[in-house]
Every structure is written in C-alpha cells, then in structure tokens.
Image (spheres, rainbow, N blue to C red):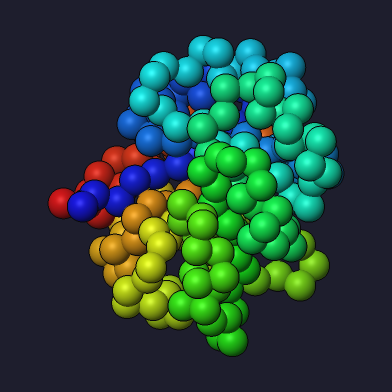
Length: 207
C-alpha cells in the first residue's frame, strides 16, 4: 500500500492548488492562533471551497474550546480533525468526525498503549517531542522508535523535507507522511518547487 502525503500549514489558495497539482492527498489548516500558520475561518472557508473532490481537508486544533471546533466544522469543508494538544479520547470523539491524534514521540513513549487509548482515532500522527512546544519544530525523531505493527495507521511528521522523505518512507512504511516547514520559503508561505520535489520523493519512496 502506498504511503500518502499531507501538506500542512496551508494559508493561501495558491499554495493549496500547488499541493493538489503536485499530488498531495490531504491539506492541513491550522486553527491555533499563536501559530505563524494560523488561518481564520473565513480564509479557510475560501481556500477549501476551491479544493477539488477527493482531496482530504484536515483541521488542526490545539486544546481548543469545543465551541470553536464546532464553529469551524459548521462553516468550513473539513473531512478530518487533527488534535495536537492534551485532548483526551472522549473529547476527540465527541465531534463525531474522523480524527487524528498527534503525539510527541520520545524514547519512553508507548505507542502501542496510546493506540489502545485512542482506539477511536483514524490514525496517530507522530511528531518530535519538544518540551517547549506541541509541534511545528521542524525536527526529526528516531524513526526506530516506531512499532513494527500498529493497531492504527501511523502518520510520520517532524522535520521531513525533500531530502529525507524517501528514506523515511522506505525505512518506516508508514501510512502517510506530513510536512509543513520542510516545504516553506517563510513560515506559513509554501515554496511550490519544494512541494513538487517533496511529492516526487514521496513517489520515489513508494516505488
């Protein structure tokens, strides 16, 4: 089964179109205001309205109030929710939408146990652990920490870019890869050439 790819941190329609054109399977939108990749509801609605069918749209939240999540879901075409904070399983499934639970991986992280804890999730997104922030570090982690088998699909994030994503896919055989800063020219603004190179390397990793 081929490894899929998500381009996260989309803030502009042109970047979304470039990612779709390059072959991305999913686009991520950050609904967390402190992030440099934050998009408000109106902008996200505008961008998602331009995205063709069969491309998944993913809304990223971090310890958000339920009312804010509900507002985004009511106004924006969102297929999957991604929870990046300390949300428990009951909160994550309360919106009755497919969701991903992001986890920050370190040597003591028990991914098998966490797959049981978040059994209602559609997948686990694995990012590098950083004590000062929840994600978007642009750093990789030790891919050997990934289990050989998992009850849930695993999405690899953290420090991926065109130079390492092919190796990441061949080494881990994860369900999907997720990139944000690795295809940017500035925070929140994508480099379309880097997106194309990233997707070419994803395809090479799948060969």
